[in-house]
Length: 225
Image (cartoon, rainbow, N blue to C red; front, side, top):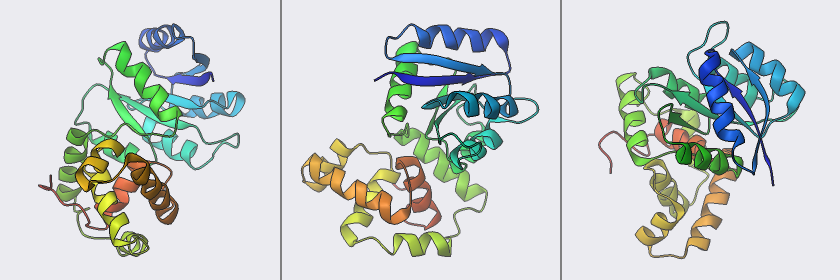
């Protein structure tokens, strides 16, 4: 299946470069491009992409606000998944973008293979949430005061069984389904079943959103491994 992609970046050369790189793959089709978040909303409304490769720092409307609109289904035309691009892996806006519904982020200087993989994983319903990124998110939330457990998040986590809570904790630490299976001594297919139920009970569409709920509920804290 061809993955429909829109590239958003305020620097024309960078934008064109990403378009060319992505278009070199047979299963990826560039259906549009935009120079800022506001323009991206119009382009996405017209093209209905599967994935939006989004710069985070842009004029008019930044990547965070654009992501918030897109993941909320605005404009009408589907809810594409968003891959955030950033120059700095500790960019504070990355954390805001993940809260806004982004399915992951990638550094702009990442090799093409990582970009291809990220687009494919996100298009397939996955999320780019590495353990190192998870730890930085936890530290950021703690420093910003977000480590105070949210009653809403605790209520949502309260819907889970003890086994599902254990799986959610490992998701929030950045473990893959295979790694979770190995840690819990169960088959990967069993883990996938648990993950699906967790997403449904938390009203989360991917691992990133589920992890944020775990952070907000105080299920995972800075320093946890």
